[in-house]
Image (tube, rainbow, N blue to C red):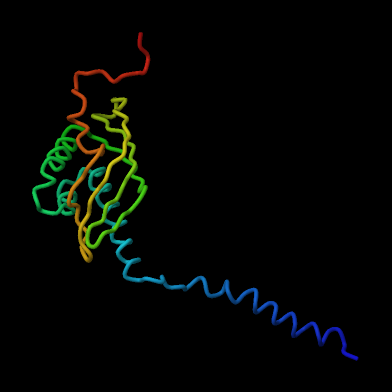
Length: 169
């Protein structure tokens, strides 16, 4: 007759190995497609860099992310005017969808932000949706921008126009 301790000890060890085996391998698991993963990271870094340069009012940093094609001249002028007009810019960018077709990457974003001319200013609050078209494999650069994007707040509403409060008659 088998003693209960001898029989259950190896069985317990096997059960413990089966339970911890799959969990132990998860920590160092490499991406299945490392090149695609690296590209997504570059896209994410480019989007974050664009937002950060805009919020910090860093025009040279913003320009560094633009493809020198002339398609973004209007965006560049709008951003420059925003940086001159507003002392504080707060912007949240959320990626809704990324569509990759060859070296072209369409990033659909939702955004919301507050633009203040000075500390006493209540600020201009806006939100919207747009698409940022990036190109490149190694270097990701902005090629074009479409839709309702946050750039150009200084030209959207004249300075003399009061902000609407939502009450009307």
